[in-house]
Length: 226
Image (cartoon, rainbow, N blue to C red):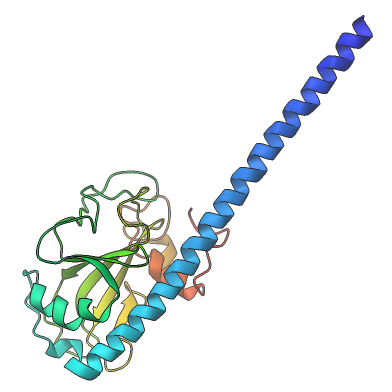
């Protein structure tokens, strides 16, 4: 009887271990698919926007000639020179809609930031990606920044966190590529380790994750703070 119970407990123990191992394997696979999907969608999105702005520049001139007014939403400018060149499902430039969530976005470490994009001019694209635009300057000089573009890969759905589904880009006054990851001129180490905006788990607002991924060929690897 004792041998039977011992054998039974051993079998139960082995099955428990196998279930735990299987659970972690499934979890790792799901995380891998999430990372792969995020990097792929971001890469394709970036390529599409670069091409869209190239077409807009051919029609409207360099972004510095568009007439940006700092402190304003520049709705007409954005509609005419930017949003009209995208595949838009919903336009929230005039008034908020379902383009961006009405929440404060979180840091990678799940801490709430002061960034809420609900009231910025926004659009929801046909592929489910949303973007919101914040004007930051007149950008008259070459390579000067005109606006920040906040890109949410899954619209209003969670996690609503920098570096996971929210990434930051910049429209600049350039005759070549007018759409770049935020502060992408910085070194890869700076983009990763900066304590305020770096793509790491302790930074306040991980705005550099798009730049870090661009320098890593849009690959989310083991060093990425997922």
